[in-house]
Amino acid sequence: MSSRRTTRSRQSSSSRITDEQINDLVSKLQALLPEAGIRSNNSMPAARVLQDTCNHIRSLHQEVDDLSERLSELLATTDTTSAQAAIIRSLLM
Amino acid sequence: MSAFHFLRALSQINKTTPKSSLLLRSRRIRHAAYASMAYTAGRSRLWSRALLRRLQRRSRLRYFSSQRTRAVIAPRRLKAVRPRSGEPSRAEALRRLVPGGAGMDYCSLLDETAHYIQCLSSQVQLMQKVVGSISS
Image (cartoon, each protein chain N blue to C red):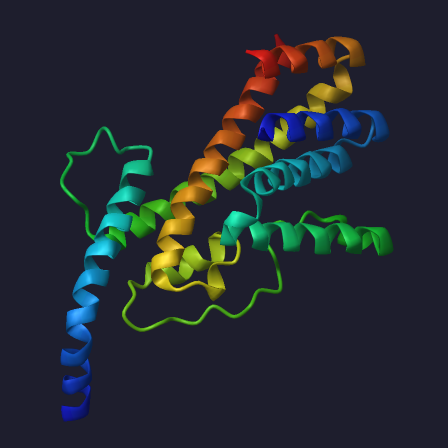
């Protein structure tokens, strides 16, 4: 028990700097969340930010899946030249 | 930059995949999406290196077995993600979602996650634009 306490006090000076870094990184993640503008600028607890971040990543993965399927359908039904023209258009815009 | 890679891959996929194989084309498009994302991020990021490794493994396997064409961008055989002390419990879940997350320290995990989300969002926006262009 006492050894754990001394380890913690030894680490506290170095971990104080790291805690600040971690808080900065967590708030950076919070700013990336889709509801960042809707919520108040108060910082959410880290656990909440991580939870929302996980949900956000999962929904982005799902969107990539859905868009891949949609693209696959579209490429099957559109003829090549008009599809290519549309693709180049989207690249230039 | 990622637009160029992705669109080139799309054009290639469109040429080489028969019109009827919707599922195969969809999987190849998804593979191209993650590949162009990781390639654009380059080797400067832990998540992009891990993702490139994972994709290269998958595409090698595809040549040998048609059973493995089930898109496994989300890997099935993961390096075990164990709970680490001093982290919120959700960090575990995050490690599984971010490529290469299992091997990162907590600080790097948070940093890599932010970049990964930004790149994912850009990729989604690009794909939405392409869909919008083709379907109009």
